[in-house]
Amino acid sequence: MANYILRFLTDFGPLPAYASPLGGRGTDVWDMVLSAGGVVQFVLLILVAFSVISWALILAKLQALRRARRQNEEFDHIFWHAGSLSQAYTQTKHLDASTLATVFRHGYSEMGKVLRLSQGEPTLPAGVMQNLRRSLDRAQAAENTRLGRAVTFLATTANTAPFIGLFGTVWGIMDAFRSIGATGAANLATVAPGIAEALVATATGLFAAIPAVVFFNHFNRRLQVMEAESDSFSQDFLNLVERDLMRRHGPAVEAVRPSEQTV
Image 1 (spheres, helix red, strand yellow):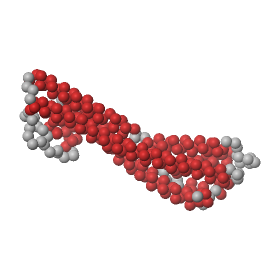
Image 2 (tube, rainbow, N blue to C red):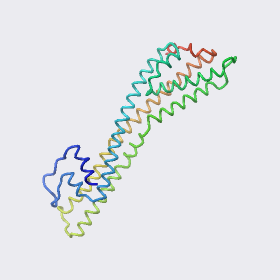
Image 3 (cartoon, helix red, strand yellow):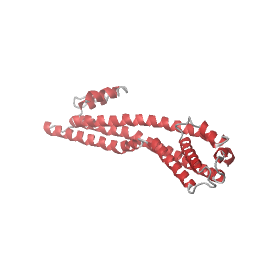
Image 4 (cartoon, rainbow, N blue to C red):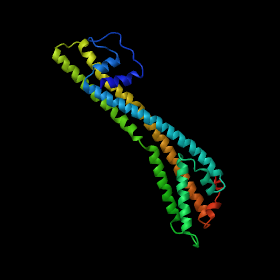
């Protein structure tokens, strides 16, 4: 187990050693990890795993949110300059990462189903707007879930990693004091190495937790902004349909011009 931890840590380069050894044991961080007890090493392995997974998630989520934001901007431009809803639907099919495009496609498809079912009827069926609103709400919820998937792992890391590290520290200090009791020597040279080894667990826990809490808050804010944008677009789309489509039956869906509805 110690060899796995050492192999991972050495990829980042060696850390400087202290000026002098304590109690005949190495004071380099890697030496302290290797000379720590099995429980402390297991705790360090868990914390390293938390850190690696957190950073992989952070990088993947940064890329996904950046792509979604870029495609949302592209969709907004296409939608409000399209000649009709059908044209906007055709021109935005490639925007698979855009939350706004996904919400719009669901709403447009639902509107098409209603119009096909009501062909030949003098009026549109009752509850059309409610059906459309529910369709938009479902699409919004699905997109929010997709973008927010696994972000809670960062919160878990931020909340648990310091305590896992503290557990390793407490256990290491217990081992250090047991060694003192066994040898009967209670001086700084005897106590310091064991305590230093134990504190590595706390430092590793903080190393895993701090980036996790920073990016968890960052992602939450970004997701809230995108959710607000989806809510705003849904309201605009419903207003557009209610003003232009619901007072004209049948093929009016092709005649609605989003550009005419901009304020």
